[in-house]
Length: 85
Image (cartoon, rainbow, N blue to C red; front, side, top):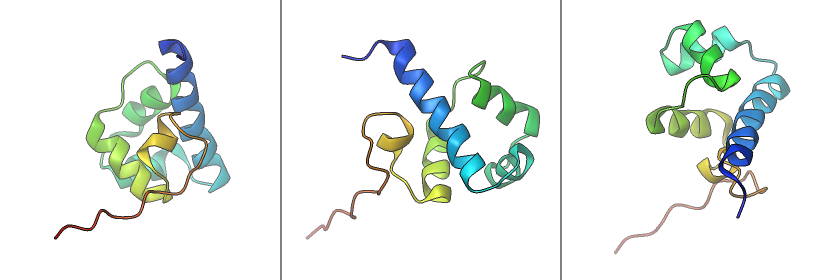
């Protein structure tokens, strides 16, 4: 099992890397999330914990799974939707 601090590092690192890879500023991502840029900066630095609803929004924004953002998988592709009867 990965230590808790290791999971947080992967999680924050992936959020930072995705933002940089897409050439977005922290301000642009904060606007998408409808939060103040300083709040987003604290999330990315790890001084605040991301709420679940914002993790989901970021996963949708970048087209990745929440498991990828959280460091539970190295496969960024979201899972296919579950078919219900």
